[in-house]
Length: 144
Image (cartoon, rainbow, N blue to C red; front, side, top):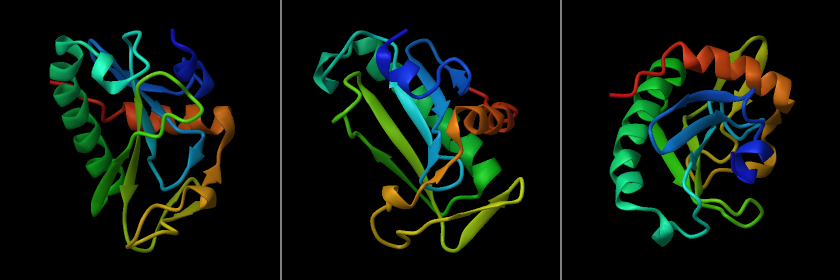
């Protein structure tokens, strides 16, 4: 598995996968349900992924959005490709909402709403907490 997936807690944080993409729960939750969508192909630039991965991205995105809509009831969703530290092609998937969501007794505000996401205000669940969140999200993972 690529180093980006490992850095985000794979395999413990695995929510689901498609043929070419992994979906992991982010240990640092910028908003409740924040995930990382990571390409399984060896690619360090978006332009390097193959046609199959581009086609499969639609399947992964549809499944992520359906899952997060059910679990988080987001109002908007942001996909951020921030490959500054982790080199493999990946997107940070940030569900957006006004106010906050509460899960397992923890409040998850959207500190940047309605502007850009405030990643520095994230709730740090650590890998173990992200693994527990991944188990919750996994219940609604349904790729086509």
